[in-house]
Length: 299
Image 1 (cartoon, rainbow, N blue to C red):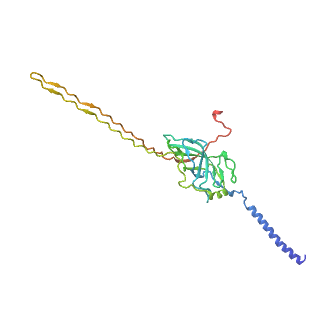
Image 2 (tube, rainbow, N blue to C red; image 1 turned 90 degrees about the vertical axis):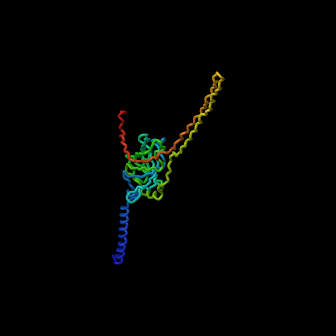
Image 3 (tube, one colour; image 1 turned 60 degrees about the vertical axis):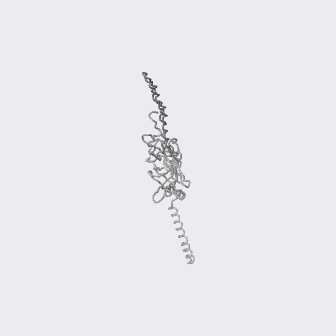
């Protein structure tokens, strides 16, 4: 090989090998970069996570029944690590499973609520584990377990005269019964759109109103008896040897008076009972029967 050709060949090698090394580096970087569906985009809330809620639709004493929907909003963000997993103001939906109304001796009621889904401000919907109506996988999140329902027993201090069991703005605490997977990108989009419930936003729905009583009326006094005096006796002296003549007088005449009329006692003020107050929210674990088992009475 001539010197000139040797120089050209060496220069070509210098250009070829760096290009090969660059392509290899790009392939290595591409292999090391996680895919768009990697786990780092999911936020996992563990079982037992507490979520503070405010009721946004009242539950009435007379009409509440199993199957009724219940609606609420998160009153405080759920924080995971250094970030927000569920913003304040996120909507929560559930279903009433059972209602135990207050009695005169206990003044307590209990509502079992199965929470079914979160609805974020950007429209991102996350079904909760165990909800048969929304058991399908949410796009962007991992499949949810159907083994555990988020069922909460809400105990309320309330009287038999209350027209509400849960009023607007009632504080309720939900406890997740199973791990919940959330899409981090959806959460990021929902945070600036979420609105924290403001103090005074929820007005009481009770229809009870204070009714002042009437003072009553005084009675009327009766009239006294009317006495008409009688006339005294008249004595006419007799003549000599004759007795006096006595004309008897008349007795007093009494005209009875009229009795008085009693007054009315009036009506007392109607005072509304104290507002219902949530005193505890406890998770409920259902003992599910195996699918192939039957009650003893049915065997």
